[in-house]
Length: 88
Image 1 (cartoon, rainbow, N blue to C red):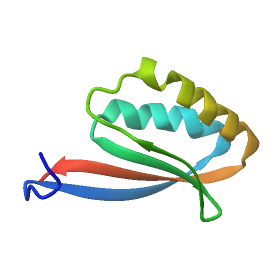
Image 2 (image 1 turned 180 degrees about the vertical axis):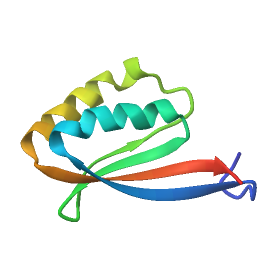
Image 3 (image 1 turned 90 degrees about the vertical axis):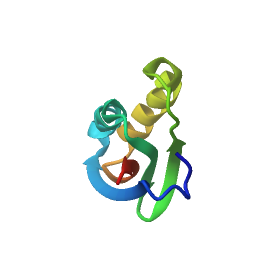
Image 4 (image 1 turned 30 degrees about the vertical axis):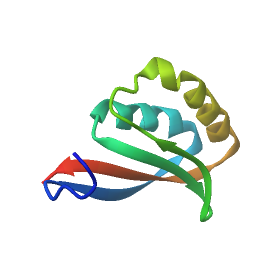
């Protein structure tokens, strides 16, 4: 399962969410399990980036999700760039 393995590919997706929906959407993405990285952007600037590895559980991300909630409360709209690793 290396990056050079041709059976795996990275898919990038960009989602627009309202600030108050940010934590909910992040949790939803984490439950999907195939997310490798989540980047929170606003106005072209990267606010925060989460590299995710296999085995990360919600308890380990709890402090980060609390910080995301604070960010979400301060911004009206942001973009989530979601990088997924899927088997081809």
